[in-house]
Length: 301
Image (cartoon, rainbow, N blue to C red; front, side, top):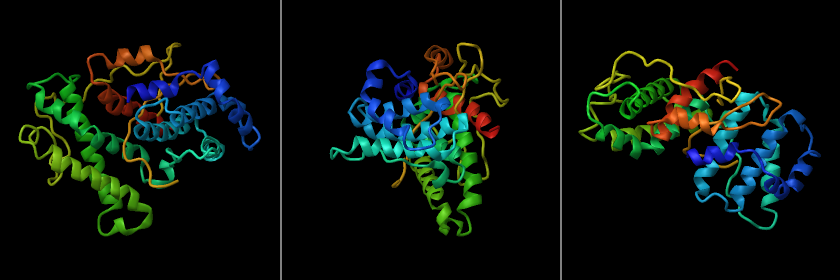
């Protein structure tokens, strides 16, 4: 996961630019092209080209990550769906013109889900549930607020709260029968099944995380009750804060992005990320800690 997002945000090098030059030139003729967003267009096309040319080993996962990355990039930079969504489709059409299978269809989180950022959090939770389970089982009690264990517990608390709120709003009292709620309710049901049948069923875990069948939304077993102080965020080299906040769509993934000034290349500050992750499982940082910042960023857009 970390490798995927580092790759997505790497600057496009001369060799990659040469490989996608014909597509870059073509999208300028499609309409809606904005010079100030050219770096994001380049990265999107490079990432798709890499996916379709077997540069990435885990194609399914990287496709999911890429759709989520694009969603958050658009939110962060206030990029409207047109033309970048069109550029995505145009690029895929070009890459499959020789008969290749479309292995990564475009998928709009805004169009397909209620509360997309919360859906992404739930997806990342249930698709990393093995690691979360190991973290909750293996750690001794008590733990410090910045420990692996407490991050996992806080993430479980947050996702349970998201699940209950969204279920009440979109899936209870037959609201799940409405077409516009079906995708969200599918994800909520997937989270519920994973949480109850894989995580909460374990005796060494069930007293450490909330019970979905009860009214509780938080557990602090072995962790400080007080909310943790804000940790170091992703910081760009100039010292400013960073954040990023078809067919059946992605069912899992994770996100992390970096941003510089809008007229400069979008860049993932690997040094800052390593510093932020020190001593913490990468997925927990990306999914929990960074999502706190993403939520603030998107909320203010």
